[in-house]
Structure formats: structure tokens, C-alpha cells
Length: 246
Image (cartoon, rainbow, N blue to C red; front, side, top):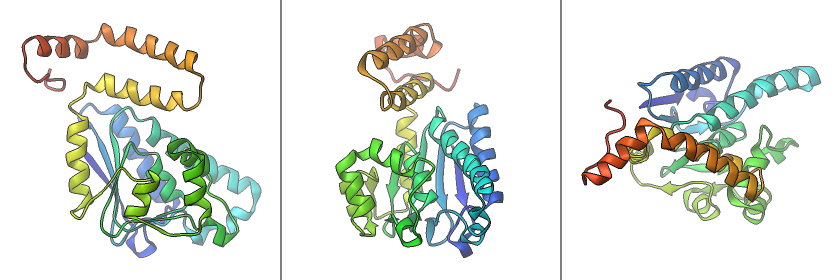
């Protein structure tokens, strides 16, 4: 299990080019390595991630520069969302801008005592991008998305939980709780987990019949897998399946 810490506490862990590249490398390594079974994202200090680095905003006023940086950020967020392994956000402190979108890309979000989810782009005359609005609507539905996005409130843990923006709130260390949750997620067969995750994302963008067809193709592949054989054998032998030890 890998814990990736956004580590620019003096800038509230705002994403700059160096941090973006480092996180992209971490996600790529997690996708390629059999030793990495889950990824936990968290922030150093008193914030999860304050979004993009405000110091670079002036250069983004050039349209071509903005599009170049935007493509790189979108690729990173897509990679986090597509990773066919558990990805969890441990949030203790502020998550805003692209930092909040990064959290929304995760499979599970644990809010610590100091968690705050902030839709503050409007104060800069901007809107959430890189899927910030679209992912929000797909995640919690239009009515709740409008409440969070347009209501003007900074959301603490309980408010974010009510809107469906976080999965759970805890009084303990959110990283430790995220590790416990990841361990429970890993009780599922890895191929099954990856397929279910991809199917869930596909279902948000397609019709029922197409989604069912995708499920059928995925199931056909899984029926011939070692994971399925182990799960079936374990069920017959009345024991817990062992998916990672073989």
C-alpha cells in the first residue's frame, strides 16, 4: 500500500508542475507494480490541497499556455480515476480547486476533524475545471451538486458527508482509517475490483443496454481468471480467498 503525500505545506500543498509530475509518476508506478495494491492520497501540514499554484495564474492568461497546463492536469486526474486499484483520499484540512477535484477522483474519501471542502473558484471569477463540475454532478446528482457548488458555504466534514462529497468522517487520523478501509477493499479479487470500478465509471456515461453489454464482456473475462477459480474454491472450502499470495 502506497501513501502519496502532497508536500508543499508552506503553500497549502497547491499543485505546481513538479508536484504534478511526481504524483503522475506515483500513479503510473502503482498501475505497473504488482507490489502496490492501493494508493492513499493525503496532504502535509494543515491542508489536503489548495488547488493550483496561484503564483502561476498570470502565465495561464495566455490561452495556449492554459490549454497545455490544463491537458496535463486533466491527464493526471484521469489517471487517478482510471487506476484499477483502490485509491483513497485522507482529507484533514482544506481541499479546494483542483485539489478538491483530485479528491473527487478517488474511490473513497475519509474526512478528518479539520477537513473543509471549499468551492471558492467564484471568488476568483472562475469555475471548477478538469471535471470539477461534471464529476461533482455525476457523483452526487444535480440538486446536491448545485447546493455545494452554488450555496456559498464552506463545507466541513458533516456538511460534506450530507451532500455525499466524502464517504466517512472520523475523529482519528484519516490516513490510518483510510488504510483500514483499503484493507477491506483488498478483500475483493483485484481483477474484479478493477473491472467493477471501470464499469461504474462507464455506467455514468452510457445507457442501460450498453452498460449491461460491458458487464457481460467483463464477466466473460473474469470467469476464466485465476481469481475466480480461487474465490470459487474458497467458497466451497468455507475459507477466506487468498488472491495476492499466489
